[in-house]
Image (cartoon, rainbow, N blue to C red; front, side):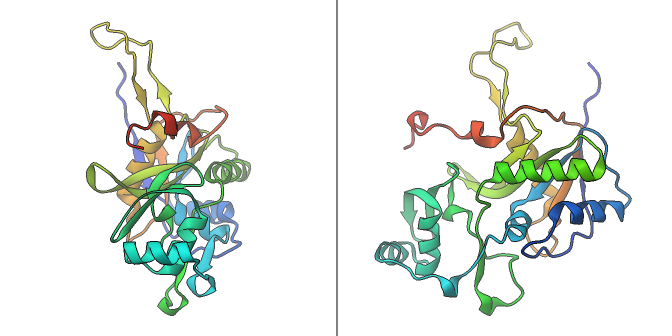
Length: 256
């Protein structure tokens, strides 16, 4: 077999993103001003936060009026009732609630804490009490950014929008693909044979999540954040659709 390799490079000098910014042009400008160069088949992984900011998915908590349900849940979870109101607005249902955390099914179908709403790296002014919401449709956002970046660069690319999430059975956060375009999100290996000729019956690999998680290793979470990563060595694909195939149907979820 040929040697396999995967390279990851953080794009330097991405500025703080503001509402309405042309994210694709900003990314291209940053790459052009660096030693990096895009090639056909590269995948760009973008942190959810910069996509949300560009799409104006920013809310001041001072503008939120919590309802009775939000106030009741906030008491149980020991959270700001205004934040809980936003969590409810962004979710299909609450799955678990305890002090410090609210696990929900986000409107996208992804099960996650606090509907992905985040305080960090939003504003230098704490008094603003700004939070970011996830993109309305992360797959649509990824597809739009992919189309823009391909037009700007003349390269065939893939795009993943990622975020850090916790896991029910593991400590710590890891990357998850919220949306993708030009990437085969899940690879179906059923029907293929293993090393000993045994036919695989259940094997499916969540490639988009694996790539999203790998990018998190060099993105950083604090003031060292590098919100755009170029991955080289994994194939792009013109398959229709994004990460929706990674969401396990509720009817197959043994824990709900």
